[in-house]
Length: 112
Image 1: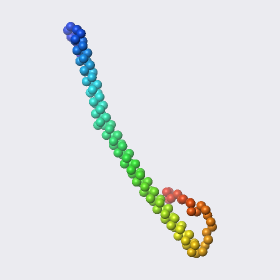
Image 2: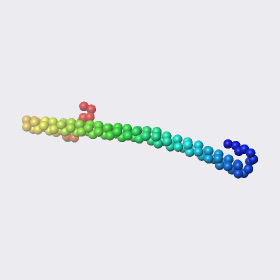
Image 3: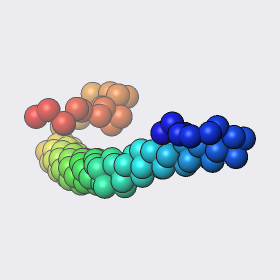
Image 4: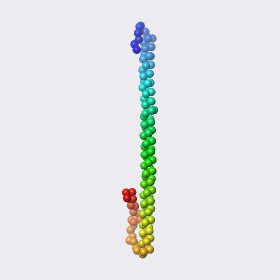
């Protein structure tokens, strides 16, 4: 907007103020668009991503818990089987050779 007529100090000052207001108004509009984009697009997208990650981590935790329970059950069953076998050998009078590592052996039951 260019001033018309006589150019006085007041007219120039009014023109600068009006130009500053227009520039400030444009900056506020741009900032409002950015704020709206953040509030309505970016934040909901991040919240959905966070929710998905939490759900997946919970599912993995449940799967791991189930897997560990199954391993414990297999180890317990194997230990009971070995105890019965040793008991039956004692009853039959068989002597088993001494093996220091037999009791401490921990088989990998995860991939059976």
